[in-house]
Length: 319
Image (cartoon, rainbow, N blue to C red):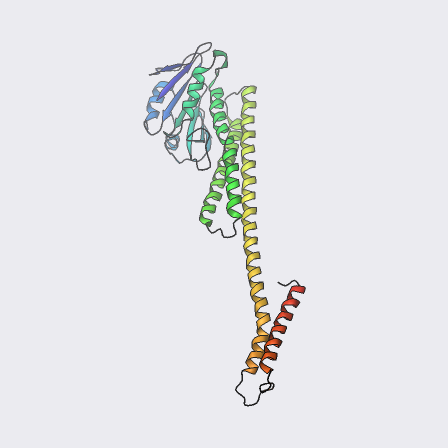
């Protein structure tokens, strides 16, 4: 557990033990869910409020979906963050749980997430006049950085889109399981962004804590950023669906072309087989059988008929 105290006109201070919340300013308590699963008791003693048992279980759930719930003592927000800065298409997300009060912000994160560590480093580097004045402003900094990570997904997603184009342009493509996994990954990112949008909007509308106008505008900007990411992912989903349909159309066209060629071959050779079958009957007397040039005439007739049928099919553009 890390506790950082923010007081007016002072640099933030990292304290080992927080006996009580500061009279002026606020505290940020940062908790790793894996290393400190029994954090609620300490927070009750230090921060002065009790976490509901169901919310405590939610905070320890490393697979919890985005979520919001408000009580008379605190607001609880569950948002997802990437495990590293500049994520790629294969990056996984983990939930960060925020408990917001007028004098304190608690954040419960997973070991694989470095979001809170990045914000902590930036805060200690800032000038005093650039530091947050209330927990809601600190929450904005955390959520804004989280949103920037989602915005940075656009570049790796663009590269992934180029890879899909190259893969699906190959008419012999067969690895549909890989494509389905990628499609599900896009759907996952889309669902996360949509849930974040709904949660932030619900929190701004339902919270009983007073949020100043500037902070409220900042959170609206964050929602707009999530909308941009969501629109971009939806465009990629539509493009992938179009590429899949285009691949299917190309495969169908190729199959139709093969069937057309085989049909043309059958049309050409069917009358030739018929004539050959007639002249191959076991009769004692067959016309032209005794003629000196009967064989050559028959072969020439068969050849002429084949060429004629081929020319006719070409003229009709059936082959």
